[in-house]
Amino acid sequence: MKLIKQIPNMLTLLNLTLGCIGILYAFDERYFILTKGQHGIYQTFEINNRLFTSGFCILLAAVIDFLDGFVARLLNAKSEIGKQLDSLADMVTFGVLPAIIIYQLLERAYFLESGALYTSKLFMLPALLIACAACWRLSKFNIDVRQHENFIGLPSPANAIFIASLPLIYIGNDYGLGNLLINKWILYGITILFSWLMVSELKMFSLKIKSLGWRGNELRVIFILLSLLLIFFMHWTGLALSIISYILLSIINSFLAKPE
Image (tube, rainbow, N blue to C red):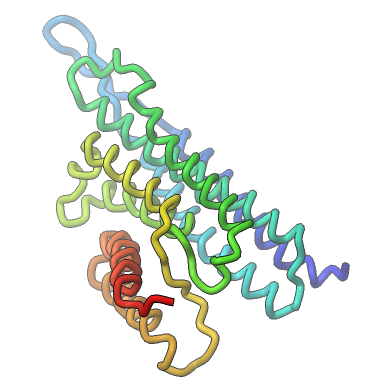
């Protein structure tokens, strides 16, 4: 195959590289503040601010994930190896990395409680449900003939973008939501809900626009405009809300759609 035909695969590998970098940053540069109390020295855990960078890695990888498919169609370079590469890269970037971000946020939530130094790692392991659900979702997508035009279940990149927004909102404390996003019960709820959405049978509309006309693209245009407004006015919180709006619009569209 000509070198130019490998450009989509190179973009896919860049997606994978960003996922690996995000994982490295998620576990990098933790620090502790030592404070002296009445009965000795206590350690206070502080969140790893480099989760901010991990979130950005997901967002950039999501753009590249869109581009590799677009470039493959443009160059007529679709291939079976490209399809497999895409799934494997997505598993790391949109499956493992989001799970690690939730893991780290859960760790922060538990370290704010009394007796934090004795908290078992087992309490953070439910975060890995995100990775398992993403793996199931990606495997199902590869063999499900119903998903050529639209999706069945929440796409793993959409789930990853939502989770990527959480440390960005937390560190910036957008709208005072910082403490809310390190509440362990809310994090468990997000983990369960979004894992279920990925493996569910809910119909989700695709963002692929095949023509420049309004007819047939109404839902996509409404979503894109709404997302741009949310992100412009609410920044990282708007990014999270854009994914929620995608889910809600998909559910509404599914109920209103005429039965086949």
